[in-house]
Length: 361
Image (cartoon, rainbow, N blue to C red; front, side, top):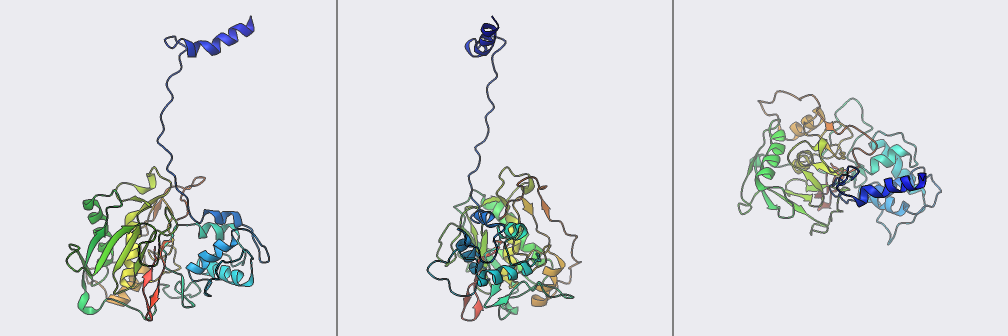
């Protein structure tokens, strides 16, 4: 008898849909966005030491080569051997990012490496652009040769040249990028004006995917977010694959891969004007940025660096308190990006003795 009652309880709610036992319809959930951080696999290397031979180390060597830590031209394929060259590269990386200099792949080092960043190298022609070992002075840096826009070009123009691959409206893009430029104009003698793409602008801005013809292909969601070129090239490219947030609060965005467009733009403009990376984490020119984070206020390091190149705006009233805003950390909040970053992040090409294409962040 008990078996019969139990069976009836299970069957009735499904059989008699008009009964009091009928189950409510299941809620519908939005599809989970599919994305893959191209550097997430580095997490599998956590704990690796010199002498180890582990699949995936070759990819890490390529990463370190891309950002200048392994200077020798890569062979056809890097090996998976944790050799002396890799140990030295990791120590330099740890020093630049103010991590414990251990020479092995401890969790804090791996976590830093997986952050989205600017594509510009941290080391160019054997010289670090981050100056993390210097004390008692500002840590801003410039490109090789200190390229800058000439005094005759203090009124710079910019135009959008490729925006069809993103769903952000033209008016919203104009507002966000104008605001990003205004943060640099407020502290310097430079001004920035949007013009049409047919007006021979000094700076061109566009969204691109994969290999887009400048020798610095984008890598999809996260990884490197954007890149720009040092003065006076003027090209500023963003990865169209990113989950860009141009309106609203990025810290509450539905996607865990959300990237604040203005934050990346402010960083990239710093490169367009001649600034390199810094090891000051609060500065705009730090190479990496976390997802769901807004970081748009220039720090003192940024201000002094840019004013040394172009002079001070007489109306400038000083640095505002740091206001980096990011989603409260939970289990996986703030996925690794990189100003870089980093990717944020970003990478520089040296052409004719002048640092050219930086793939920033």
